[in-house]
Length: 148
Image 1 (cartoon, rainbow, N blue to C red):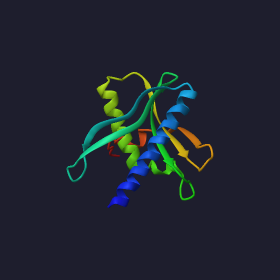
Image 2 (cartoon, rainbow, N blue to C red; image 1 turned 45 degrees about the vertical axis):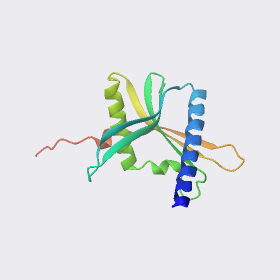
Image 3 (tube, rainbow, N blue to C red; image 1 turned 180 degrees about the vertical axis):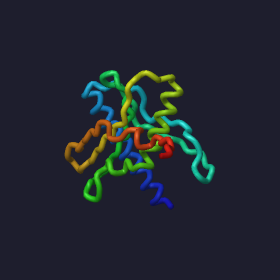
Image 4 (cartoon, rainbow, N blue to C red; image 1 turned 90 degrees about the horizontal axis):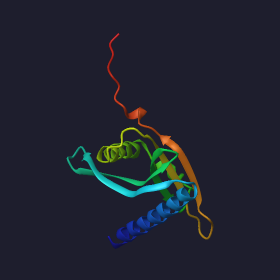
């Protein structure tokens, strides 16, 4: 049990370091950070347990609100960090962003979903990749049923 707790602690530290690096990266590229680690209840899962959504960074650039997921790994030999932003994670980010926009009455501003991938290698500069508009809400919208 202790090794699992230690592993979670190390993973959390890696994630926090990655989010800090991502924030510095965004500031250098003229983004204004609006919020970090925004958390809000977004509903319940199939078992009735409350689900909390989190967005790592929220920023503004060129009059566009940007919801940013940061993925940090110590190696990309198995898979690149951005592959962890699967459909389930995308759906959760969209639900959280919708709640954010509703809470703060944000209606008439462009927005997008970005992913920042960071690989931290020993004693080397981190490898940072910024995927702008990595996904959008279109594939999650319910389609109207039309009969022929």
